[in-house]
Length: 142
Image 1 (spheres, rainbow, N blue to C red):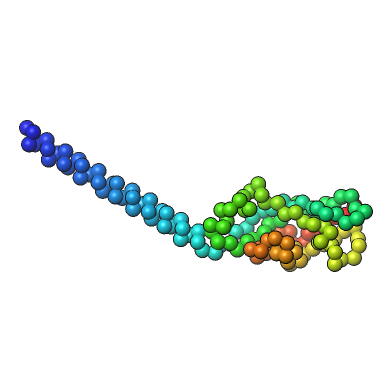
Image 2: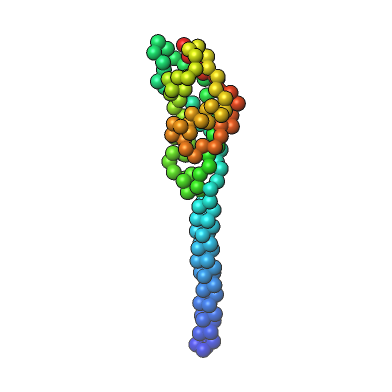
């Protein structure tokens, strides 16, 4: 009877080996896919809140026609996982003084997508490709 049990135990041990090898290969392929996918340049469109700062002298407050911007970035996939793109850090702090320095003094200023994009690239958003929404951002200074 002992002779019969021994082959059955060997058979059970042989059945455990292929699933283990399969799992190891599956994990290695998942890791390889992750690094290959996230090492390419990718475009990401994110929504940012708009906050105004550095008001011109004599002005007390400012408001925007839209409180959010839809920005498109060109980043490497792994860079996208950094904290600067995290949802709690998606705030654009627009310096009103810098934004309106080349415009005549008024109580309302309008900025196109291209003007906003150029301003943001010059002020700390080098990977920015475009400002998708709004088409025109109006700033009201009081």
